[in-house]
Image (cartoon, rainbow, N blue to C red; front, top):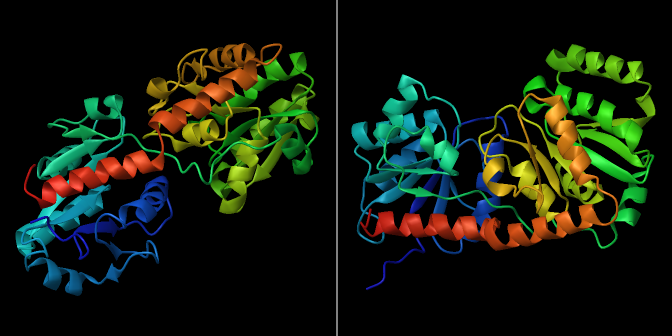
Length: 355
């Protein structure tokens, strides 16, 4: 008999109070996953769409067999979540299958390695991230983007005019404003590129925390030195619901990070039919096809970034062609529905004892 998935099967811990990229990726999956498996959260509030259990209630429920007669899936994405999962399983004897998704593209600490080696299943989001994991990776499931939220503008020129910024086209960079996001290289590259392309305006969207205000003032001084103050627009932190609108207004998006876990910004731009110039960080090297849906540049290299922008800003309809190919690639390979389906398949394998 087919197991009953209408009851609680999958536990989503949220043990980071701050809203982060991890939180965002989990949230966008929930509407699709909750129709296929019974989801609950534990820890800090995550989503009103699924029940949230306290620790005592969770322990009480998961020490008993699930509705299917077996274990529950506990899907961790952070070290602290792996630790709590191990405590639940080893100390409180909860009937859990511990799953961890690794996205970091760096050498893991001894503590992290200890934690994920004690998981029942380890997943990753890209081949590069998986290469840093020192234990078997069961499956690579790339992140996806919500194409209902991120979609092309019916008329990009009209959308740009509605934004009220100077020029005819926007070159945007999205995310918190700090050196590791490649803002210095972005500014230096555009100080070379913008004088040759008078119709383009640089747009920086993202929060500037007090720690990084001196860094921003340094960048603005460099822009003034080049006489390009009117060509750079700093919009700061915008409400979440406005971000997709600004993606649709851009003609080119730059992802210039020195390192990334995955880097959803690239897919959000591509889903908006906007081509991307990206550094070889995160999953971008596997997503961007050089000259077909965008261009790649070297990390921490403003000249390489400028050269890639120049190739993208080509006479004629080159940007439009790149953007349409980017859109097709996202719809084919990188939708949130595909990610949710792949994770649900993993959960069901765990619940049915096939892992």
